[in-house]
Length: 138
Image (cartoon, rainbow, N blue to C red; front, side, top):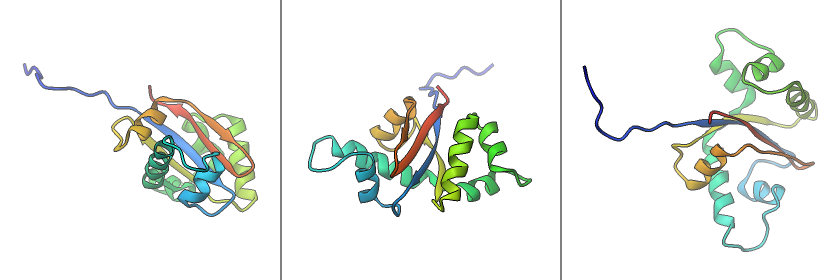
């Protein structure tokens, strides 16, 4: 029998969906979530942007990579724990011609912002941004 004697981690992840009315950029992301002007807190949201940017993928590309057989958006999102309301919102965003991204934040992430937002459940549903991080693995 083997006994592990070193440090053991229990990592987790939070799936997210994000869509912005403006073209994807750090500036438009920060503006959409209400970060403007200079503040010591800006770094948290700049780090969050970097984590999202690193981990996001176009929803259709993500679905194609994850599934051997093509699936409807609603089926894919439902299988990943999202409600019918979220499926309707994503379909609405796509009908409006907006780009929708899907990704995961990890508790093993490279920044404290990624780790923090991985542990939280949140939805930001505004005209300029839809950011849903309700599905977590904690």
